[in-house]
Length: 179
Image (cartoon, rainbow, N blue to C red; front, side):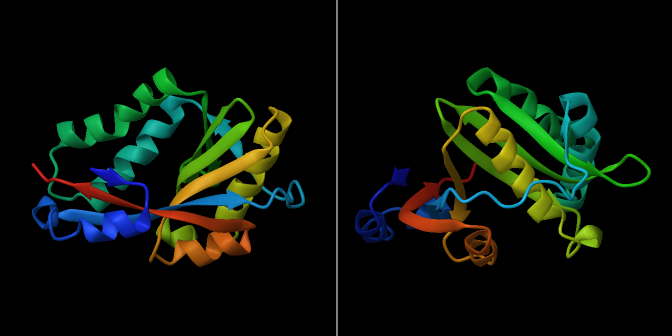
């Protein structure tokens, strides 16, 4: 269940308490000022190139999952292209392994950049910033002039996104039941 007005979603908390997951998320819109281009090793990746990285990350994040569950979670990205024009962006290490990645969706002059992951041992090297810069420039070249992302209202990346030129928009409440 999703409520797009903060006050309505907050008021529904008691009614949906049994759902197990309640997230406050917000849409963050980019200012439109593009950062300098370049300075990175960001490239577009095929699904086949990306899946091994996804499998490795799902194994780390969900250690109780079977290999079949991990494979299915990783391969669900093959469905994304059915609903949107998506480009998987990534950065590889010297061995060719994907160490940072994100998903860029562009349609009708609007771009969304989501699911940005930088492996823990490679954080603090500017790879996330390189991904965002590449996504902004790639989507601008494709005709986008509106850029946004979805963020948790109370999680640390929000401040980082603000430093990258995004500003907070409306808060939504999302309630999810756990099976």
